[in-house]
Amino acid sequence: MTNVSISFTEYLQTKAGITDEQLLQLNDAIQSKTIEKGSVLLRQGEICSHSFFLEKGLLRSYTIDAAGKEHIIQFASESWIISDRSSIFFNEPSDFYIDAVEDSTLILIDQNFINLACEISVSFRLFNDRALQNHIRHLQKRINLLLGASAEERYLDFIKLYPDMLLRAPQWMIASYLGITPESLSRVRKELAKRNFKPY
Amino acid sequence: MTNVSISFTEYLQTKAGITDEQLLQLNDAIQSKTIEKGSVLLRQGEICSHSFFLEKGLLRSYTIDAAGKEHIIQFASESWIISDRSSIFFNEPSDFYIDAVEDSTLILIDQNFINLACEISVSFRLFNDRALQNHIRHLQKRINLLLGASAEERYLDFIKLYPDMLLRAPQWMIASYLGITPESLSRVRKELAKRNFKPY
DNA sequence: TTGATTTCTTATCATACATCAATGCATACG
DNA sequence: CGTATGCATTGATGTATGATAAGAAATCAA
Image 1 (cartoon, each protein chain N blue to C red):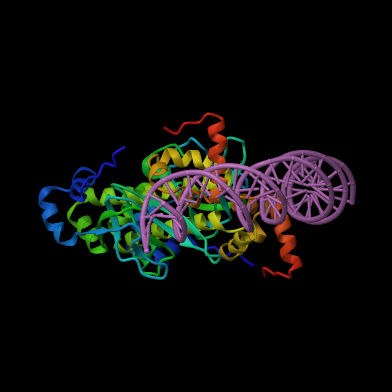
Image 2: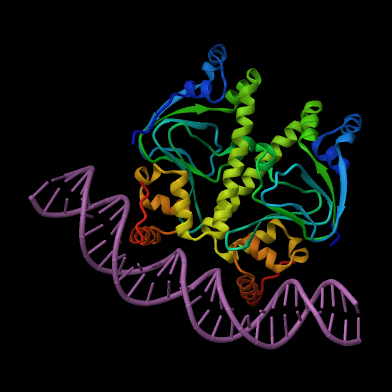
């Protein structure tokens, strides 16, 4: 599978209904950045100043609890946006880390950009609202799974949501996302294989 | 403890910065409703048409999974708003039920109301945005706890978040919110009592 | 290529939580 | 009044998942 990378401008045009002229106005507020695998973009305690749009590569956000364990909150690959919304919006120290799982090229989006884009484009504003609501829907679904579903069910759901992560993220990260140990995930996979399950 | 009930209009004025004149414009879009304990306001599969502001009483939202088990998503008591945002926003069938844990009086808020209020009041719009972001922050925190914390830790956190629920909601509902069985919650409480923990 | 790390698997044992069943205890009800 | 109903507790037992340790396999670096 090739991880289809589309540029941020392309994304703004096709998904958010931004026109060519509007793009010109926005251009100044857009910065691009290339980072290596392992680079840290945000640390717990820092205030998150940007959202990151992934043109290419893979990022993750995660917390580290009192016992020193990582809990992965989210993955973001091509055409996804990742950030700590709460930290940005409330201007508060973040609970998260964000770092690069693969070498990545990304676009830095700050609040100025969002405000400007919302001002000059109604369709961008609607798009942005939609994204917020979608985020909530997604979080709610995850809570629901964590409340009631077994590790296996959650894993199967994960595969549906992030099919390409199976190939791109190490298993221990997937386990962390699911809230189980890598060993447990290994067992779940073994069990599924025995029952002849094929993810692809 | 008396459950302080404030009226919706009072809430709009003090929290959302709505003025007296604006209230007059909004008045037509507001309906009040009194319901008995056990009344169901929303069922899985229905499209959620209103948010509910609690003037008095206690509501809950929950899902029922394939095995017939309830998972409580949220409680809402005085001055809280409860709904299925995704269902309202995307006009999709809801995954949730919403019903009354106590006799309640509530205000029905539909999308017209929100749109109108956002139009005529900047401060309402900001307030609304803030509420959305707060919702996200809250969901994220809950996910984080479900990923990493024990039943006991989650219970202690619950007490901090909803101190009065201990007295108002039956224990099996709290257990459902926490993602454990009532029996397990009973044991957690016993253990805490043994270690001389006093919630109030 | 080779050796060094990192990741994945497997095995064993430990534990938190679930399940099932019985009991107690209120409150509601005929 | 007795009895039904709903909820909380308790005990016995089961099970999924965690912890630890070790080896196999894959990846990376030199």
